[in-house]
Length: 173
Image 1: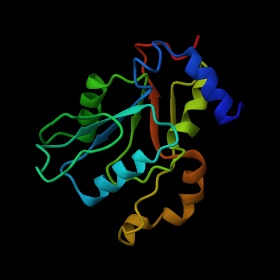
Image 2: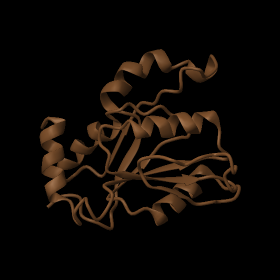
Image 3: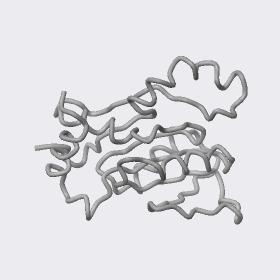
């Protein structure tokens, strides 16, 4: 497999339209209401090594007026009402402008290399989706962290959440 850097260079030149016009990723986060975990997830997204993305937040209702969305990436808020996470993800996909759709929970902790490490897998034209292990924030309760010790190293290497290539647009050549 190509190194992440060379594969990213290859994909960046092959994507249509150019990255300067279309965010490479749309990260979709379904949730009921804002929590400290959501803030931590957004903060971790701000530290991504690969910075070409937008975030779509899908809450049940309007965000609290005190919840600031001041990040170095575009944030779209699409209120869903009380529906399932699957419906929220579909809603996010409809407003997304990215070539790739990345799904992550509001209490997930993406490694800084999450997007950078997932993208090279799409250099193989037969790949349509990529997933990885997930980790919860370190201040979660015992039961929320039960698997944390088993996957933390993998998350730092491979990322977390799921990534899909949008079928309506070509991924590569």
